[in-house]
Amino acid sequence: MVKRNLESVLRARLAAMAGVVLLGPRQVGKTTMARQVAGNWPGGAIYLDLERPADRRRLDDADTYLRAQRGKLVVIDEIHRAPGLFEILRGIIDDRRAAGDRFGHFLLLGSAAIELMRQASETLAGRVAYLDMAPLDAGEIAPTGIDIDRLWVRGGFPDSLLAATDADSLDWRRDFIRSYLERDVPMFAPRLPAETVGRLWLMLAHQQGGLLNQARLAASLGVSAPAIGRYIDLLADLRLLRRLPPWGGNLNKRLVKTPKIYIRDSGLVHALLELERWDHIIGHPVAGSSYEGMVIENLIQAAGERRQAFYFRTQDGAEIDLVFESGGMPELAIEIKRSSAPSPDRGFSSACDALAIDARYVVYPGDQAFPLRHGAQAIPLGEMVERLRRQDPT
Image (tube, rainbow, N blue to C red):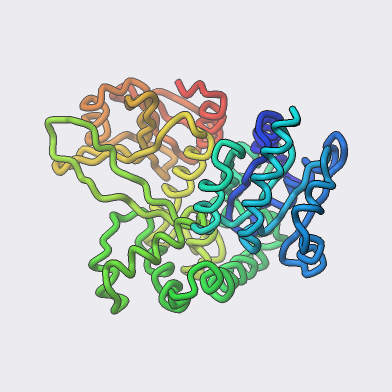
């Protein structure tokens, strides 16, 4: 089992709040981590999976049952299946607060349905914290000896990454994609045709890291541009897509203002394109943008909530693949090169100068850091992840 860095954050949030909503795609490891936390919780814990009829029946009189668990951590998986619980949880939390019992009551797991987030935000505002769980990243796999190329090829979902063979891993990812289209899309968005969502997902894999052009996607799929917006909203809400916004500060330059779209897990990109092994991927046109997407996802996850992520591009070609902003100011610029001898582009240097960023890095698939021209430094992905996680990127 790979230790998840989010576990310590989860324990800290439960020690400070009445509850935590843990969000993330299916099979990312939410249940495993919740059971780890619950297994040694002071006072014991109760685990309820609302996909199991027996557990749903235990909540027929949810108020009475949950009040009887005082002192225990109650873990409720697939919480979106019982949206009416939020009102009950609010009453229980408020009553316990009034009695001086304020922390560590509920851990709610969900796949980030829009309706779930809306109801939780409206009903439990100020009572619970929210955490996002992503697939495994370069920092988490480092102690295991798994190399980053394997992470890139298979993606970070644990069952895919740890499969016995590349073929087994690809089969797992194919089933994962099929289950989302056959089960989750109809569940979370019954009015959206799953077949069209699947075709869009495939198109986005071919265009990994491209600028979002809803009109062109709509024309290709024979639907309206607003419909494309709804499909993308759904995939983003399920934590399967990332819309990376452009940096939009006040500069005397014409800036590109369209978000970039990435499928968040590189293994899913490769599965959608039927690319099984490293040698299949490296010769495919998507290789560079797939690697870029994996690096961006790893770094955003490592940076946490203290830094906001953007890309930067001017109309005359100055570009930064990833900009981290803190306190409203851009502080860190990252270019991504899948090359053993990386060199920053001239546009990267001029973009950094325009934003007055001194901390400039080129992330590459090597194992040593070294200086480059224009004040940049080449750095391995794993090292950059650890610097961001320590909140010491420079």
